[in-house]
Structures are given as structure tokens and as C-alpha cells.
Image 1 (cartoon, rainbow, N blue to C red):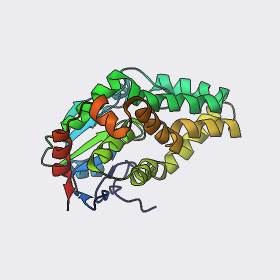
Image 2: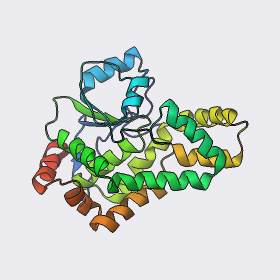
Image 3: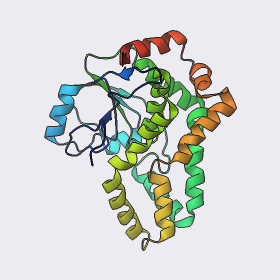
Length: 265
């Protein structure tokens, strides 16, 4: 499948640029500057060569446990470890502990999985630790390296997805386009998610429709979760723009600097 922005990598299916995304006022995101990704562990030598040529800064949003289990390979880029969560989160972090909990949750109740993930997304907005780290993420982008900035978590879906949502909001991209980018992860990870579903179904004693539905809710990007972000930001801060200003403390000068750096007419 030809997916816009996806880099031609052998082993990293959800590594893609924001190149060329248009803003509401008709500007576009500069090429070769902003890359969102899943984990980089297991990258082939060919992939590492491409990343070496392309990326100057990696921002790792994973927990310490995730990093210990699947460390980023070294390819010459500067690295900033910026965990959005310090502890495991079912369906979000993909370390061994939270994966086991995900099996159990999926076996119990798909609605519980949906409710849980919705709360995870709401917590991106409501929890002070997450807010402070997303604010730092945005400020790291104020002094970009000569090569691209790449940020990633494990799947490149939730923590990475919200980071991209915040940046696209600041750059002036309309919400429908932001949603399209968010959901594009499902296309990138389609084969991996299908294999994961079969594997987990076997672990749970057989893949039933209930389990399959729950796993989709845990491991796929969902419009419901995207909407929960905006609903929570509107409830607590008036809007997503209000959240960025008041919840994250990103100033108008900082916002304008990001637009200057990453947009072209």
C-alpha cells in the first residue's frame, strides 16, 4: 500500500514524515524535517543507513522499561529520552508486563478495553506529568538539528500520535487532516496488527469475536479516542488551542517560531 509520507524502510512500517501536509491558510510542512515513528528496535542495516542520512535528533517517548527491553539502535543522531508515562499502560506501552495485562483485559470485556483507552487519551490532557512532557517535546522542536527530528513511542500510535496532533494544531492544520494522519497508523501497521491478533488469540485459548474486538480497541487508532482528546481539552481548557496555551504553556512567540521553522508558502 502506498501510504503518504512513509519512508522506504525494510523493517519500520510506521515511520513516516509530515512532509507536505497543508495548513488551513494554504502553507505546507517543509520536507525532511518532521518524522513520526514506532520503535526503532530491530531496524535493518539498510534502515539504519537511511536514518543516519535523514535524522539528527530522536525523541523517545517510551517508558524506561520499554527502552530497556527494546533499546533504540545507535545511528549517530542525538537522543532525548522523554517518557510520557513512567509506568506501564495497557495497550499503550508494549513491554512484557502491560502486554500480559492486555491479554487479560481483552479476555474479559471489549467495552472495558474501549473505556480504558479513552481514559488513557483523556489523561494526556488532564495529567500534569504528561502535560509537562508534551510541552518539553514541543520546545525541543524550537531548536531543530540540521537533519530531521524523529519522535517515537512503541507502536507510534498513542503517545506519538498525540505529539503529532499538538504540532499539527500549532502549525494550523485543520482537524479533518489531523484525524487522517492519526488514523493512517492503522494502514501502516495493518499486517503487524493482524499477526498480533492471531498471536494473542492463541495465548487466550482461541480467537473469538469478543477478543478480536477488544484487541482492535487496544491496539488500533480509533476515532473515538481522537474525539476524547478534543472533548477533554474543550471541557478543561475551552478548546485544543486553549489546552496548548494554558495547559502546556506554549506561548504565541513559541508557536510562531514553530510555524516559521516548519512551514513554507
